[in-house]
Image 1 (cartoon, helix red, strand yellow):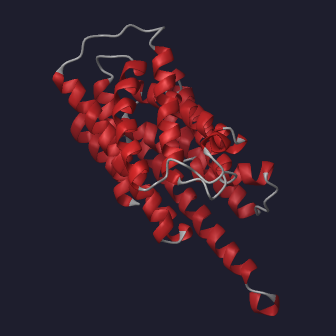
Image 2 (cartoon, rainbow, N blue to C red):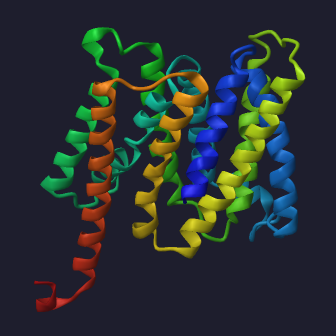
Length: 290
């Protein structure tokens, strides 16, 4: 999981550097074009190109279609925010995901959420307000895009729960990468294609490589370890984001942004711990639960 988080945030850093001299759509087309080739070869190696029931049935299933649409929108919103926001700040806003999932599970899936987790969710949103600080002009279009990305990722994860377990994870990754490639291709009708240097091509190829590594390792971490144990290690992404933001972009959060980040992380860790404790308690029958 920690390798996966390093892969994701390194990919973000490469994309942020590449987008200094090109549009988002062009960057997505090049990165995802390379990523599709890599993921296709992995699918072929794992015999994941033909899901049970057929490719068309998998592609047209509503949960997969919703998941792919949400992931595509999340990529657009997050990378648009990342182009204007410091890396660490954009990454910190994404750490609202566990809290948003808790809230969405209660509101839309009918899951029981106690007052402690509701309080943790509100506490976490307070941390994001410290990071963005609307009253000081910190909340702008980029911040809104980052929040929209969180909502889309929340929808993506809820839809993922409904995707049939027989559909291989690599197949889902291939479909998602292809959808983002198509979105970038459509976007090229609205922004010019600019000449790019070998350095920028290298950045996008490395972004594709690191995102593939991230996909592989995040899948492996969930399959090998218990989700409740592995999930908190997602927050290692903040360490990487702070280091890369400082060393590569000369951006380092001020004391309020650091405090807000700490609040979001603590809230998320508490949510993970509370969910694990609740699941353990409900799995013990009768008086033993006491």
